Image (cartoon, rainbow, N blue to C red; front, side):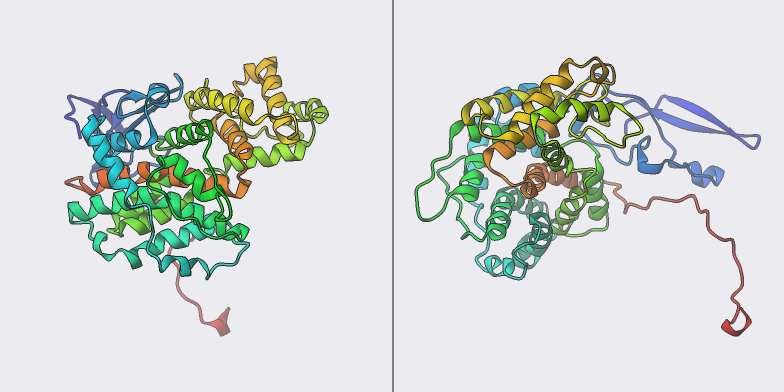
Length: 431
C-alpha cells in the first residue's frame, strides 16, 4: 500500500478517528478503513462493493467518465490496433511489453501446450449432448487439477507459471471441444502452425472430411474480441477468482469459479442477451415499435447491448469492436441474414436518435461482439465460453498478483445483520 501523508477524520459518538488517505497512480483517492472495526467497533456497509477497493492492483485501470481502459498503462485502442492477443497476454502477466525474443518464446510455450490430456476426451462423454457449453467448461476446467498435479502447488512460483501457461493454451481447446460435443461433431486437435485465434476458429469449424482455411479477417476479428475482453479490473468474475484464490485453492479451481460467475446473464451473458433481443425483434420493420417501447419506462422493455454500467459516455472497446464488426459484415455480407440486418438498422437508429444520445445509450462491446460471433457462425450458447477463454489471462494475472502479495489474507466480507436477536430454544411440544 502506498504511504499516506493525508487523513480523513470520522466523528462517531463524540470520538474522532483518523483514516489514512491513499493516492493511486491515477484515479480517485482511497480511504483506508482497515482499522476502523478494531478502533471504533464499526464497519462499513457497501452492497456490491461498488465503493470499496478490496485489493491493490497494477494490472488494469478504468475511467468510466472518460471512457478509458488501460492494460498496464497502455490504452486498449492502441493495443487493439497494433498488438496481438498473445502479446497482450504477456503484458498482463509480466507487466511489460515483450521484446521480439520474449514474445517468440512466449508464443512457442503457449502453442506447444494447446493439446489436452487424452483422457479428458472421455470426461466430456459424462455430459449430456444438450448441456450448455459453459456448464461443460466449468466442470472440465475444474477437473484439470485432477490431470495436471504438477502445477497445483500455489507456493511454488514455477508451478504457478506452468499453470498459467497451461490454462491460456488449453482454454480455447476446451471451449472448442465443448462446442463440438454440443453439435455432435468430432473433436479437432489444435494445429501449431496457426495463430492463437486462427487455431481456435479451426478447432471450432473444421471437420475431418474436408480442408478448412481460416479467413484472416475473421482471425483478426477474433483476436480483437479476445484482446478487448482480456481483463476488466475487479468485476464480479475477477473478484470471484481472487476470493477463491485467497483460500489457497488451486489455480484450476479458481478459474473454474470465475467461469461459473461469468455465466451469469448480468455479467458474461450480456452479448447473448443482446442477440436474443434482436431475434425477438425479428425484422427491420418492427424496429420503430420496439424503439417506442424502449423509450416507455412502463413497458418493461430494456435495450440490451446499449450503454454500460461503468462507462458513462462511451465504451472504448465498442469503438474498436465496431471496426471489426464492419470488416466482418463486409466480408460475409448481411443481405441474406435477417438478424444482422436488424442489428445494423438498430445500431443506425440508436446512434441518430436524440433520446438514446441524451441517455448515452450507445452500442457497447457486447452488442458488436455478439453480431460478429453470430456472423462467424457461432450459436449464442458459445458467446460466453468465448468470453471466458478471452478473460482467462486476466483472471490468471489477477490471481498471480494476489498470491504474490506479502500480506495476503483470505477474503472475509462482513454483513449488516438484520435477523432475530438472541433467543432461547423452545421444545416442539411447547410451540
